Image (tube, rainbow, N blue to C red):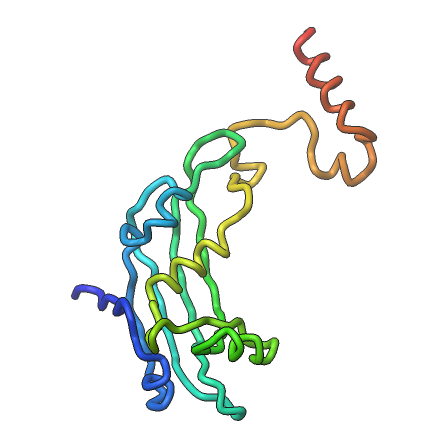
Length: 173
């Protein structure tokens, strides 16, 4: 059975009045901004959106997304799988003034001409949850560093230049 694709644009205010729920997938290949940050444009993002109106009359969007991306480790330059599972709550606003007036518990999202671009929203959430410096866990990486995190925490390495000295001694041997 083929997966249900999420629509490109929706009217969030109409969906919220009816308390609608959207579940489906978004193809990673359709995300142009994300494609330069990952190693492979294959796969899908599984999404679940629930539209509603809170006690204060604020239109909200509760979302859940899950995907697995192929990133390039910046230590060993090998690809690795990175899983993202995110829950978020957004306050829907039509203007910047409305967005500024939202309570702090809501991340604001602006509509364009009364419509919300869901696929762009999914892409934004994924980009926000990417690591700043993609890298394997230390034990899974092919590059062995001369100093471990525990040595730095215990104070065995007193300066960054001490690491260079360790490397120099290894080369001399």
